[in-house]
Image (cartoon, rainbow, N blue to C red; front, side, top):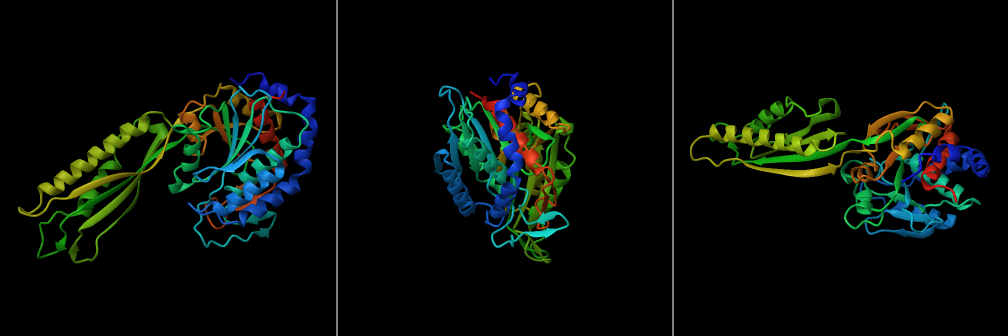
Length: 402
């Protein structure tokens, strides 16, 4: 385990003062790298070009074992002095929410930089490269190996596919000692609770027909409407830590036709472990009841409805307890840098290691931001250097210094 004495040891280590100063002195370089990365398209399932640039940068920094894995993650490492110790993973996701063809040219206005993805996650990637650059040229050596991972598929339908590949099954990082995700901006937030999600697509099909001549045929939209109304009033387990959203619906072909198909998508979320499977079971029961009731009303001899439920997203829940040494280290370092730490929950790459019991957090890398996931997304570099210094110290607190 990471020693709980790590935060004061790192904060008081005189050998790290030049590194901390360099984090501040190289602030312009970090921002320039952020601006370079944001104009490289990285749409959902299209992270190859941005990944290639990060792969190139890892090589230029002299990281060890630089490679791209079969899922598309880009990896490099700084070897530790203790080969038997588990690694510390520093991750930042490559992908954005923006489709291919989105205009990415930055616009500078009133101290802000406007560009889709400038914060989420060009800032996280630039922060990861800054930490790697500082450590690669440092005279001190970490005790644990530090693995830098630029991951694919963190956003939306990507469903954490990159980090899942690294950790699940026989994933090469499953034995990691700690995980720190660098995601977006800010200096205070410490994400130690993983908000999990189960996303369902429900599809109903029936005979359809003319709204008058085929009246009495079962109506998929009517069944889905009844189901949506009931799902929205379900009693939620752990209600202060759980949410259920009927997110999208569609179906039908004409105002004067009984639809032969309809669909609905639902987003189930919880930060409480074990809740999502129970909630999904309740949702499926409601759907089955609504279909049965619509079928019971159909005209004799007409075909019954067919239902299909598909899991289209599955992000695990989890928590790194507040008293875990990694969270305590992040808390102490944040406070020592003059900020008020905030322990929060979110959905990030850290969900997967948290669910596996690996100490994991996600933090921002300084600066301020707004308009996240919109084409008016912006970043302001106030205290940007302090965010890099904070990330550097948290990583070294986890890895230890030889």
